[in-house]
Length: 232
Ligand code: IMP
Image 1: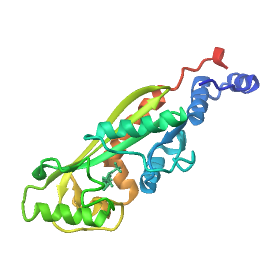
Image 2: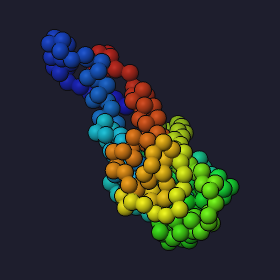
Image 3: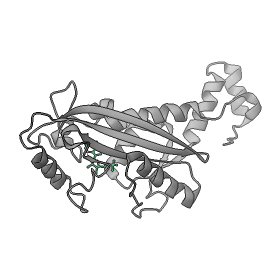
Image 4: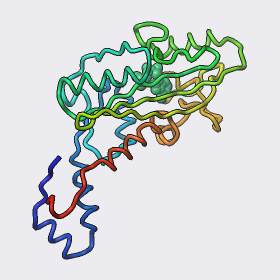
């Protein structure tokens, strides 16, 4: 990407010596970096804007008028995330990232995993999904589980993968009303409240998605093109 910064701004910054020019220039390039988040889930778009902050110009699928359901038929999270990112990249040529998350429960051999959204049927009902998980687990005390998020990024045509994991336990009854999906029955390791009993800030400091997106954010920041006075 090439961004033109007026020479007067450059010389003002340099002559006053108050702001480090390299820092100033990189901040402008980061803010100018437009990137599409390939998701129709408004909860997630809200969470990710919160995690990435104002640093990047994040476009939703609504912003680029592509709100159709993107196919998610791959047998693993990695394949699904890549398929969604490629779908948007092939249609628009824009820089894009997509994520896929699964709840992996040990006692169920890793289910619902890649089928977390449709575990109890095509309607993607959060309530019915929880009901099914609780019924399958019954009274077992072996309730270890993890949320795993995979992000696929296509930046300037090159593909990259990032992963974030939070371990925890599936409790026997729902607690809390915040969040979405399986939040009311998932207690993260080291806590005694469910994700649905946490506010967004608290969830975002430890969640699978926050961990994966933190890696994405660091990667994007370190891959902004170098900046020196010859590029101005
Ligand atoms: P997605 O790939 O982020 O759309 O997630 C697939 C499914 O996993 C969602 O429909 C939810 O049922 C579940 N899920 C994903 N992230 C979370 C979360 O943070 N809390 C609870 N459930 C989640």
